[in-house]
Image (cartoon, rainbow, N blue to C red; front, side):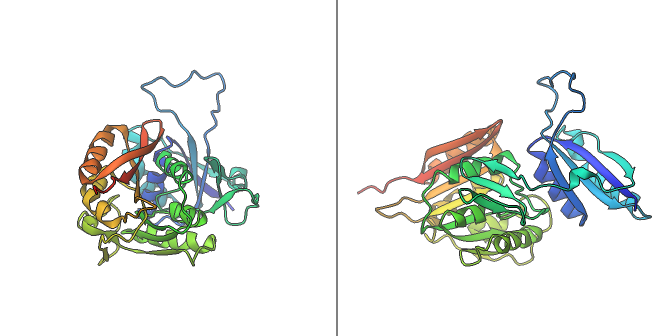
Length: 323
């Protein structure tokens, strides 16, 4: 059987954008993501003005009458990413056999000191905190710098027995991570693909007793439309911000953090033993000061951060109450 292969190289932050765009066109075929390997070992390093490729994405279609129109539609959707330098020009080829590089994802990839992201059937060490993800088109592959930085901050938290909120759950990777560190988690997203992906990740990791995944948003988040400009879930429920959570993780756009800063404050509870923690990611250093200022004005103080290239994830805590 012949196959049509569409192949492209991406920057680290483009991986999840590619997946989101594929979901928008209804792509259901094979999706393989591998670390980028240059074919020319003598090629000079990329200059500061040129993108540095981190991953290679491969899509595979049965070679038939529909495959050409499918690939043209996908390439049209990907063109804005190419224009902004987040991907290179996609390459098309007809192959007689399924490429060998689609076969093995067993090694997974490590994040921080404790986490490893693996496919559902890959073997794991008992010493690892394993996050099993099927190949999903939801935002949150575990390869995006913001996701990695969120996981690094999470593993520095003591989550046993906490009530946590994952706002904009995407693939569900952060919800599963918090559950495996001992938290009870409410996972919210306003995207159909993301809700289904989170629910699948919860089942795959056997954390159904710890994670509730549903369509929804926090407070005024329901008024902001779809955070990534994709397909929304109709009639998204609003979760009222009433001091129900010890920890909130939100890996979403800066404008959402800024708008929701007062709601984050109201949704976190503060006790003698623990002041509510907020972890915000999904933005670059260009927006760092603006996000921090909005959170400071809402009653938070910065306690930690994690940076990867231009991406930053901030950890804030409720300021102590005045006696």
